[in-house]
Image (tube, rainbow, N blue to C red; front, side):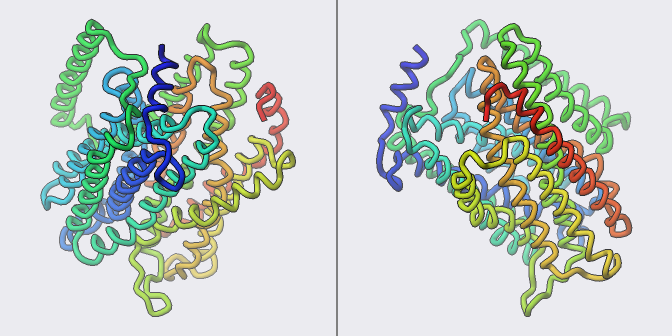
Length: 497
């Protein structure tokens, strides 16, 4: 019955109309374009808004605390994707999840756009975390529903969709960053809210015509009795959380510092429990258990990689603001503009890497070796950025090209590891846990940022050489270990290439 329903979904979708692809790709392309525009626009200026003084329109937080909160924010966004996927699969389908998520994101940006208090800032965090968790995983799954399993346009469709993600991410820091940094933070957040509103308008007014039944299928709907039980449990948990917060905050037990520790523990504990549960499940075969063992070092490598890559919006954002010469070649550079480098380099280099893997064919590196290359480039990106301090000292402003080079090198690593990781996850996942294993892959980024929240407090201009050197050195060491044990890991994959 489920297969028949999925087939009817595919058949109901108009099959041509957007660069030779289903018209629904237009809807999802621009929904995701504007969602990424709003999210990365907000992200480009949020850390500055947190630690800039009140006289400059900021909240006046301590820098190390602002950087830690930014990491927590990113970690919770990825963790919330598990909730969003569950709600879509069990309650209301991907289409409604995308729409509800977009509304929550827009409301979160509106809360940031209102000049106010720290309370509004935390309200916005909750709204955006929940909204992104609803929208992000489900809009991607809807792209897959536009094509049958044998449609040769499927990979190309995801490539076009991926371009929408990166185009939105590229333009947002240039527009929102300029307005937020040069004029007013709240106006910048307001533009991010408008971006999400445009995404919602496109989705709402084109989904019936373009998407057909895509996103309406509920994979494993709750029965009426199960719904009552779930709502009752959610209510109990909500009441308990409110009670805990109401009691612990006045007692001084729940603070920024304790929240950072809690998120750090959850970031490691949740994926660990996932691995144990899948490995011990009777639905996992012996071959699948072997593949799970092979997946563990890849997952650890991914955590190390994302721990470096995600510091582009925290430590390197602070570095751009405080340590970089922003008047360069007759142009004043906004520190927020550096956030556009990652998506720009991905747009330029992704086709090159796709061509390279096809060109190499059977001679291309194995999956573990590609991960090792990813870690190698990540480590080098941090070692490169410590060189200016070594040559010029901690007080000299750094040529911005050093920062550009660091972002460029880490993107080389991202293109070795990120798309390969997505592909490897689908291949190594136990059959009974294919969707949950994809959620597990995204938890590698959540774990990385949870770890970052613990370590960013050690960064300062005085410690930057040690900070970049130690983290970069650990990445290089793990890269060497992964290169060394690649044949062994490949053996545990039981035929997966």
